[in-house]
Length: 433
Ligand code: C2E
Ligand code: MG
Ligand code: MG
Image (cartoon, rainbow, N blue to C red; front, side, top):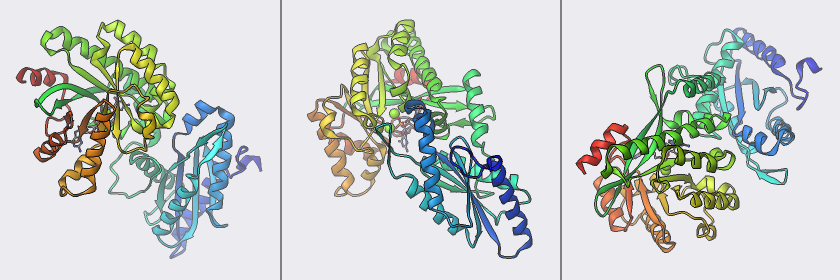
């Protein structure tokens, strides 16, 4: 039994899974009306559980997930553990692709039930890739490859999603593993770039700072946005090296701007900090060293922490934020309004600004009685009552700008003022303002 079963979960292993799926491929070729689907299930953020709670807790989570997966399937289906936090499911003899989608939705609902591990509440989720047998398959390897590609697509769409492999809709995109090794090389070969998007003071209509936004100059010529690779980098732990690079490059650039022209400073540069970087890297020491190395004034540096990062562990977040504040850097809450802030903690956080998420700014396109207007006004009022400033992101037109100004929002950022640009363009933008 060991040879074809996984010793931790007792589930069939890769060997057995490949054998059964190969049989389905043959059956499909021989039997009219026979269809099957393969689902690749990959846990989101599993590495973080493993790193922070230990391998035993990680193992317990895997066992629990395998039980949940089995509970969602019919007796004739097969669930296997392929390795790590990767599971695969073979849906044998189904009718239409909607059957597979229904199973994927059921799996996700089941997987996301919270559980306690080492005294902490964990909210598991998984990304699922689906390959369906109407894409003519000649070998089991082709099925696996498509399910893997779709799984990667699901991860790229954000976590806890599923995606169906569709031959023409999916570009020849990198698979999960290919992206992982390409990302590692990208760090060594310095393929990352920072772009800078201006932040304007609404009252004076002048730029007061910039947000650093990462891009990946992929060797195949494409410039990839953070949405296309940061999710996976967070998953595999590479985010720490990337985040370190971003901070170092930001400090270097601040120094260069400062040396070039006295009039450029004081200019604020905002840098995004990922969840893992915030809680699990030695952020404070790194910053202290960078400030020293590049001789910059910490007050020129602002860190953007998302609301969901802060709310993950509010007490720890308050402590880290205080240490950062002691270094002299300022902190703002990014994507505000999308998480669920406990408002009674907000005043304990040493922050000096909130960024209203761009999804709210879009609601200005509707008429002035819409709920979005009320939300924007409440956030601005709340911030001002706490004595902190407000930045609106995603300002795309004069109408957005005019309303936000009327609401007494302090700062704005968006395509209306300027898209993310290269360091050179920053200098000319400041020169003309
Ligand atoms: P964010 O921090 O909320 O950044 C704002 C995003 O909105 C940027 O997308 C920006 O290009 C986009 N944007 C700006 N103005 C407009 C507008 O008028 N309309 C619309 N529709 N979009 C606008 P981008 O550069 O793709 O970054 C996406 C997210 O990736 C960022 O969201 C941030 O959370 C993350 N990110 C970017 N760079 C880094 C980094 O160096 N480190 C970390 N940890 N995260 C980063
Ligand atoms: Mg940001
Ligand atoms: Mg944001």
